[in-house]
Image 1 (cartoon, rainbow, N blue to C red):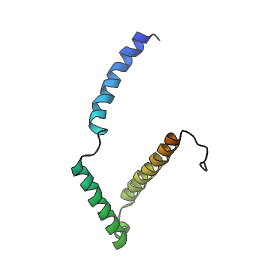
Image 2 (image 1 turned 90 degrees about the horizontal axis):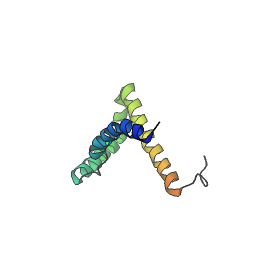
Image 3 (image 1 turned 120 degrees about the vertical axis):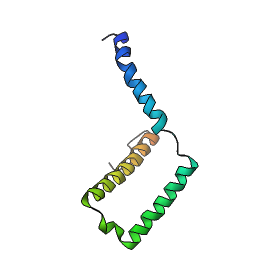
Image 4 (image 1 turned 45 degrees about the vertical axis):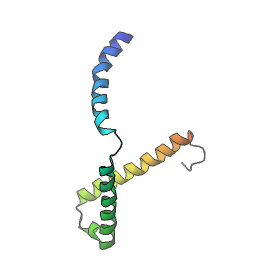
Length: 90
């Protein structure tokens, strides 16, 4: 595969990636940060009151997957930042 062919194949895909990256990968605005804090407060309230018991299996599964995604991204970021797996119990 020549370089010119690779560029012609990848150019539309990179354009699509950049289109979505400009929207999805921007840092949160101050208004969005206040939503995060209020959402976290609501999460703590529902944990204290037992509202989590009223979730459907689908909602609980989605919440679990999102939580695991956050945890895995944190640990992968730690490994990337440390540039090594040495020192972690893997």
